Length: 179
Image (cartoon, rainbow, N blue to C red; front, side, top):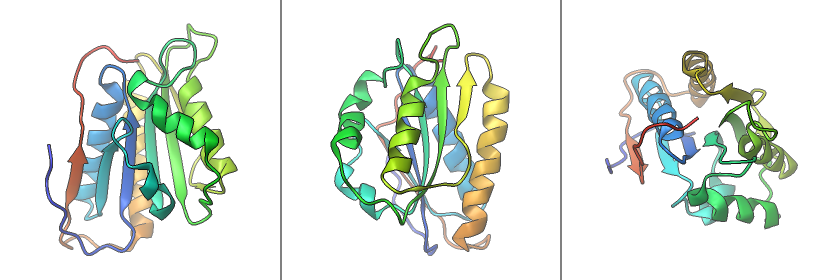
């Protein structure tokens, strides 16, 4: 799905997601929809196709990632995670929040989200809120946390309700059963 951007807000919220079977994508879409309803500028990106050359130019990032197996990122996002591990980008101008999805039955519960959170902070990005680890079946609390975080990002954007708002989406996967 691709909808052109039309927005006057100065600080767009970039929502990045990495998904194995669809839950992270669903949560990312819900967060984007909420931000748009509040008049925010939103960019929705799947980490499977995200252009890493744009990372240093982002200002506000909400990242939602599932964990695959024993703490690994989703297969489709491995290149992005490897890029982060090897990168020396300066992200001091970036604010971020991370939601990590996982299954507490595994030793490396939410390992991919923890890795992403640590790496963004190590690159100088400022944490807007502590990482939120979400266990299988905790979708209601996850959505509540996302609503709180989206409001925090949007309130700081300075874009009042009623400004022209738009969303740009790419590479959304929709399947069932992701933790």
